[in-house]
Amino acid sequence: MHNFSEEQLMIQELARRIAIEKIVPVREHYDRSGEFPWEIVEEIKKSDLFGVFIPEEYGGFGGGITEMAIVTEELSRACGGISLAFAATGLGAMPILLSGSDGQKSKYLPQIATGEKLTAFALTEPDAGSDAGGLKTTAIKDGNEYVLDGTKQWITNGGEAKIYTVIALTDPTRGARGASAFIVEDGTPGFSYGKKEDKMGIRGSTTRELIFEDCRIPAENLIGREGMGFMVAMKTLDSSRPGVAAQAIGIAEGALEAAIQYARERIQFGKPVIANQGLQWMLADMATQIEAARALIYKVAAMIDAGEKKVGKMSAMAKLFASDVAMKVTTDAVQVFGGYGYMREYPVEKMMRDAKITQIYEGTNQIQRNVIGTALISEAARKK
Image (cartoon, rainbow, N blue to C red; front, side):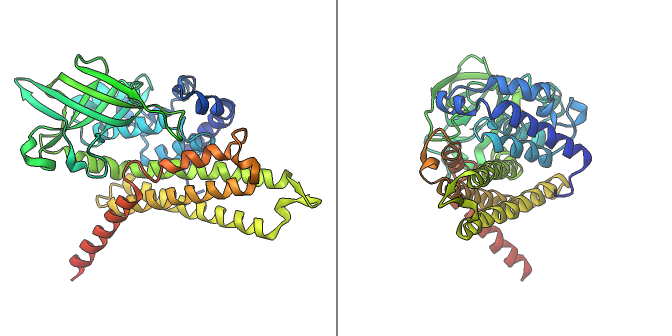
């Protein structure tokens, strides 16, 4: 069990109970309706799980990325979409946790720890996905305020969250070096929401456009210093990618469990299909890949929690490997179910749809390979 502490095992047990008792019965409803799962958010709030990655002085449990990954993994075993209400709040809180001032932490983290306010992280734009250097949203200083103008796209928890961490250009002439990070609260004049996306998977999570039109925020909402926006964003993603990996592996575990159960119950040629060696080998590969990915995820989470600075390469590896495993395992789970796997009354087709996004968001897997490759080159150059 990755040598989890007693507290971590308790967190795991609590999250697992919510997943089985509360999420499994409603996951199909949210997948079909595309509504935001507020009833599950209430359950997570009641269990104090939103505070697992928030320091104790701000009303949290005092854990870190490991605890965030544990909860995300367990909730994702039941539903990869619904789990995002929690996981995307972790992502949105990360810039404040890592780079926020004492005042910002004191103001916002207690509200996040109790689950009173969900958060979201806003980096992507219509013309800036993998190429974050293509940002167009600006934040121009005017006295003791910044004026935001622009659009953010595909923001998880968009419209449901109350606190947004937003990357915008304070000096558009400097490109990526002119980006800064800000906290923007829901209800700020000039801040509105665009269309809610109709998605292939993670339909129990809301993905919306954020629109800033002459949106004025106090200067004290700047995170860190001007020009540090990309540093804040990259540090955030290095810390949050194990969370995406945990989501992916949770989805894969849910699919494997469903496939094993079905293979034991399905009778063909007078015996359960699990008696076929070919199918056993398939399940063996699925289980082995999941275990390998989990080991990598919790190794990286432990590195981050121990304060290691250069985690970008390992973090990218965890996200890349776990999401590729999730896609393969869920596809194989559909195959194990045969024709039934293709039908919406069984959960594996949903898991396959949910798994796909983990290869795409928070940096596509092609971008992860770039990150890893670049790190390998610079490591080799340093060894010379």
